[in-house]
Length: 268
Ligand SMILES: [Zn+2]
Image (cartoon, rainbow, N blue to C red; front, side, top):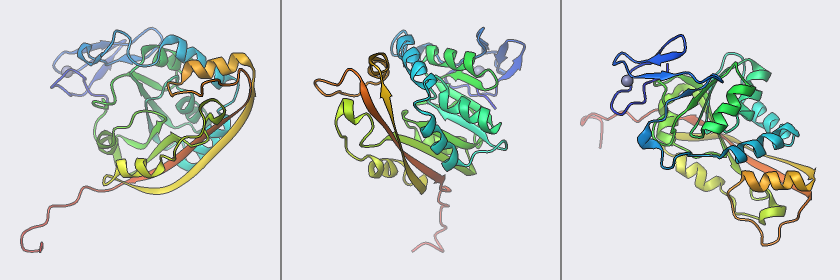
């Protein structure tokens, strides 16, 4: 199901012990914590792409305080995920949402992120899931129609690749920050639902949407963790502590079949 990431290869990878290899003998070692790094050297725009170890640790501390639990429950409910699902989380970060979904439902779980510290943290916490370092902006290293559910949770989005790796009967869950998300730190932002739905057309059709919102009374250390784990602009003088709002717009999409080419006799 995993594909070789060497440019121009794309052959299936097979595991033998701690090594994955393709028929052309490109090989990838499984890391000590259990993840697989498929990132090619030319795909690294910097030496350490994606979230830093500090940002990953800050986000993990926030998740460990249970702040995102209501958001996770809303995602679980909207997706209706079960043990029968084969799930991909593209841009999974520290693995909180995917690992929680696997623990709660028993689904088969596969997470991709470009950040090695994020995937390493995910693999250590949730060893039952498959964790891959890869650049999902370019290509998702899985065969066509592998997944019944793809998650994109406040991550970069690649509609053509999401469509390719989803089964025709599959679902795509996209979570984007709602206007009130972190409003105390950032001020109100615009609604991004319409532009997101447009960005996924014509390959996906919106089935349903939910806004999930929760608040938490945070001490100064937790507010600092938020500031370390987000990259969006802040108010000039954000509060050092206090009640903070977390809000996601959850959009559930269905893949649309590629239109069949009409024969000249039936087209007008
Ligand atoms: Zn290969």
